[in-house]
Length: 59
Image 1 (cartoon, rainbow, N blue to C red):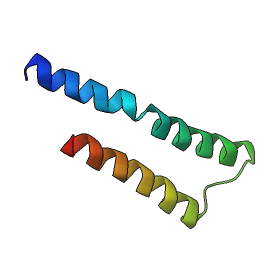
Image 2: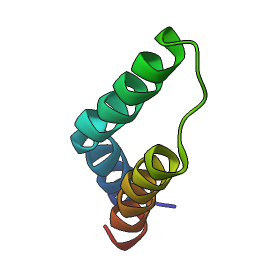
Image 3: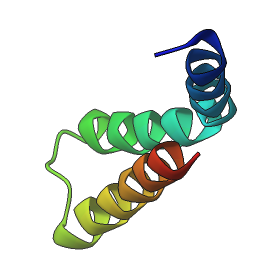
């Protein structure tokens, strides 16, 4: 992997920090309520993560 490819990956990951923060905030809120995520919450979190992964893969 060359430096340009590595830089592109890092740029994508850094630009997706808001997505990471969003997922973590959702999970923290759920766990602070001392409960497990509902099916809908898991679906939402998974969709967010899947979209971020797709964006990273297709850069």
